[in-house]
Image 1 (cartoon, helix red, strand yellow):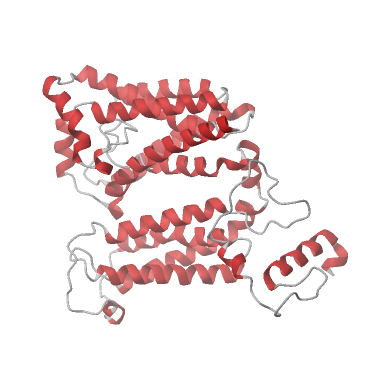
Image 2 (cartoon, rainbow, N blue to C red):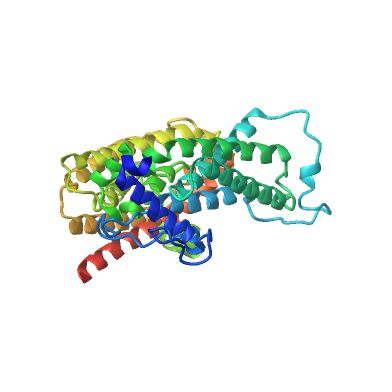
Length: 421
């Protein structure tokens, strides 16, 4: 019936069947009947190299996997969940109980609603991304079931490891909440996959505004938004290298502090430069892979607004003792406005100039963050503040350093690649 009504759809289904089952398009089987192509299954989690255009498939060939960004995002989110579940990774001790003894523990009489909500929310993106990563090779009920099994196994393993951490408690309630969050996320992922990953409006917008190779830049830009959650001596001032390479990286700042103590006015100027440089850097990272559409000058403002909104909403959860809006200073406001003005003008430069501008801005940001003598008042308040929901602050502080290095590498690699061509 479908074949007579839509020949192209019938041909597509025949090609998909031949790729999965192992049959020729005409119907004759190449080998053993109904044998699953394992390389096809493995390809779901091993994204192929992205071509410079949209024509990675030959005319008439069915493109079976269209979610490399979802697979990469899934890996990142799973690593974040592992980090949040096992933080601070110290004090491991054998308590004399089996790792999975918590499964047989009695159901607790009292629950903490906020913790259940947090556990559900933590696995929502895992379930959704897992379904998107499988699409369209696996969809609907099968994809939802696979996502729930994955989330349950992941949560169960992490809860078992928490048995040996003295400051963590393995709980069957947490396991149930995590599995429930994975189920809700999987259902949402199954419902939105056709529009987000198939041929929906969001996919059409992505291909209209960005080049096919923009996946890595889009993920880095999304991560930058969430890197702004922790407290910062300067707005968007991420990239403290001592967190990545050790205390010796803080030596230049300490030596400079012996001979120079910045005045309040100088710290305001430093924050203006640092914040403005950060805005320019992340904007150029995103804009150099954007297509030459007339409205691309709005992208920097949209990105910064997302970062400020996330910071305003999630920072009180990450640091309950932090006064709301304490990061809104004169230096931050002037830096954001100045950075957006420069980034909006730079949106219409050639990609090569945008990469140079982005790398220069990142270097300026790194220099200010790592050379400016530390603010003693900020360090004192940070030392006594309490870390809150899901260890968001410690997690994002560690990732923020890696982000700056990855962004520099990405911009430099793109420049070298363009020069070689």
